[in-house]
Length: 326
Ligand SMILES: Nc1ncnc2c1ncn2[C@@H]1O[C@H](COP(=O)(O)OP(=O)(O)OP(=O)(O)O)[C@@H](O)[C@H]1O
Image 1 (cartoon, protein in one colour):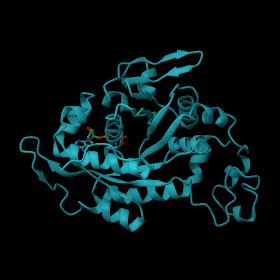
Image 2 (cartoon, rainbow, N blue to C red):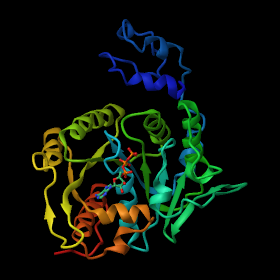
Image 3 (cartoon, rainbow, N blue to C red):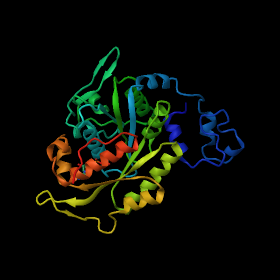
Image 4 (cartoon, protein in one colour):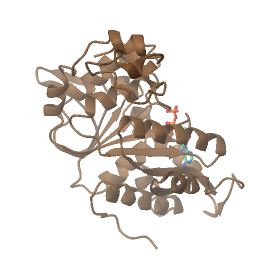
């Protein structure tokens, strides 16, 4: 298999009739002449990753695998991942796992209130860190000697860690595994996609904010999914409208652009999953590692969030079970 550092270059648009980087004809076919990836493809080791059967076996009891993506950083991808996880886990019968593959910027442990936890390694694998009886997480954060330590890794090391998360973690039986990724289309995305392809990814939820600059990158993210063969489950507009914590009234802060996510979803033929308002209490709940669903069950933001959670469930073929809000 080509190293991740090498494959990350393959994001350059492939020529027509590209044989793909893993095939026998990679770098040799007529179509490869003049392609910027030709040398990389020609020298890359061929054949599937030998660990894929182990990964497929380890993940065989996970019903749905969902990637959470964003074109831009800071649009609330990790926040949404944690809220989606808590939303799914409101039903105590539903088993949920969150895998944080933002290797250089892990934030799931803090947002879910378990950043000081460490993982336990045994002969059978690594145990995930539990946030609730039916909600577990895995992140590189649990392996760092201090929570302030920085991870400065290049592609192959990141790939190796993601492989460990998939191959060695005892996820057990899960209804949903949510994969929180870094922004954009980086080494981590390529790793996750190639390692999970065999065991099946349900699709990706793409998070954006309403501003045009964020929407611009969403187009690239949707195109990345198309190229990588990942189904786009839908688009979520985060920080759409401001909910005042005092009066709970809602106002538009991005006047010119609110609704841009929905329009873009329509234009690109993907499902619009809904809006999550900008609510300072969401930020506070994340800072304290609390479930927003528990902290503010009656807030207007929760009503919007529940609708989004239900739509994601429907997109993967499950029935909604959160109570209907007026
Ligand atoms: N709907 C919201 N209302 C209020 N604050 C929010 C909301 N969504 C996210 N935030 C806040 O915005 C900040 C960025 O969110 P987050 O870290 O989830 O973004 P990200 O897209 O995962 O970032 P990165 O690119 O670093 O991975 C956090 O402080 C978070 O608390």
